Amino acid sequence: MVLSLVRVDDRIIHGQTTTRWTKVRPVFGIIVVGDDIANDTLRKKVLKSAAGNLRLGIYTVDQAIDKIQKAMDSDKNYFLISNSPQTMAKLLELGADFGKELNVGPMNTREGTKVLGRTVAIDPQDYKAFDYIESKGVTINFQLLPDDEIKKWKAFRAKFDSLD
Image 1 (cartoon, rainbow, N blue to C red):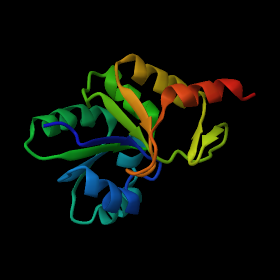
Image 2 (cartoon, rainbow, N blue to C red):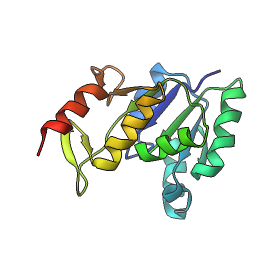
Image 3 (cartoon, one colour):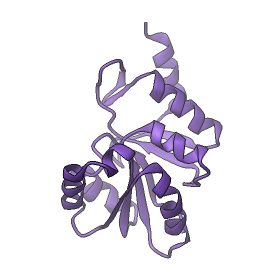
Image 4 (cartoon, rainbow, N blue to C red):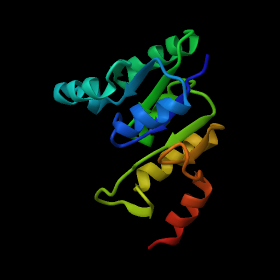
């Protein structure tokens, strides 16, 4: 078994996740990883509601290492989602194996970011995280919806570098 979708999405679970992505990628449950999310009671309740009938686990980075391995060993399909590329980089640093593809959805404008495309704005920490993830052999695909054109990290890296 492999994780059927590994994604960075600043909204975590929302309509596009539960209606569009679940139609093209099989899923039994969603593993959400983020220390900030795992420690926010209200946000966890909102995500549980958004997940609907899908099984949901929300974990800190340290807790997620074991949970990701259990999902990989399971006969069920899971989505692995975080709101931050830094979280995904940290998982790799700690030895997690989430496969060879990272899908990146919305990363909307925040303070200190450069806008690189439709719903893609990154800061220098995001940049470093994506470079690290790619250096570990993970292909990074920016794709909001399953039928959207895939854009690669190389193109977004070049655009980031060209902006002052």
